[in-house]
Length: 115
Image (cartoon, helix red, strand yellow):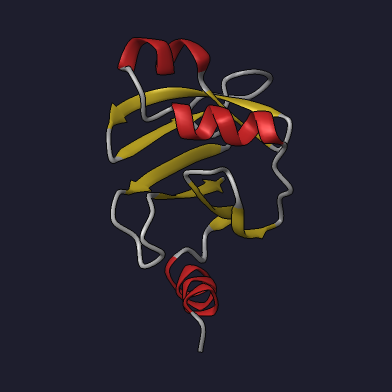
């Protein structure tokens, strides 16, 4: 079984509550996605969420045409919620993790959204 197939199976098992999930590398190549087709600019905001804290919080994260406000910035984990047209406690959330040393030999990112 390939590494990407192992990642896909593990994601389905580990994140049953997720609405979407996405894996991509430092070069913004999508390795696998479920229920989303991110634009290049969305991938940039997701990658850049792990940069300087204040700038990341100001930019937020974007996926599936939605903006998510960053509530916690603790690399390698960053997460937040959508705040527009929804109750902040019950609206869609997003969580992202940066994997510095992946099985592919390059930094990779895992992102999921949840309700």
